[in-house]
Length: 201
Image (cartoon, rainbow, N blue to C red; front, side, top):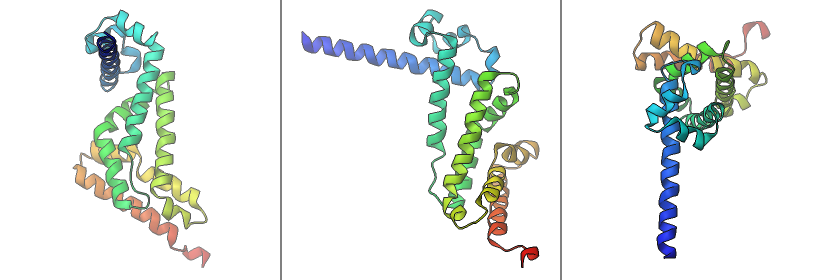
């Protein structure tokens, strides 16, 4: 009897977790195509194939659901951006991989940040994460510089989602060409940081 009860409780817990994941996945999917303000609990429930009451039972409120979805998405982004420190080729490839998968979603979030507080929270985190990622990915190169903040700023720009957008979306370049041109920018930043300027000689 105890074994049966444990099995039943375990199956129930798995079902609850599966429902939670479906609800979060539904919200994340909706957020890829429309502004946060246009996403209702009805939309999320429909996408997850559950009732609104189930959504509220699992998360308590729309705000709590959005916060949990943001934490899940943030964890996914951090995992996708892992790259060995000091490997320039891997760093550029990794960030372009990330933008190919999530760049247009990031641009949609950025378009909302001035009028949607939740979007602002998402983009503030994204900007901080990108800067930290650049600092970590290029840590060996930055460690050799006296003015590492200037170089860090320039590397952030060279690998930013807007740089990818200019090349990939606005110019319509292929992924491979966009990646090569972002690599050229990164190499130029690193070269200028390690080569003395003529006016300082």
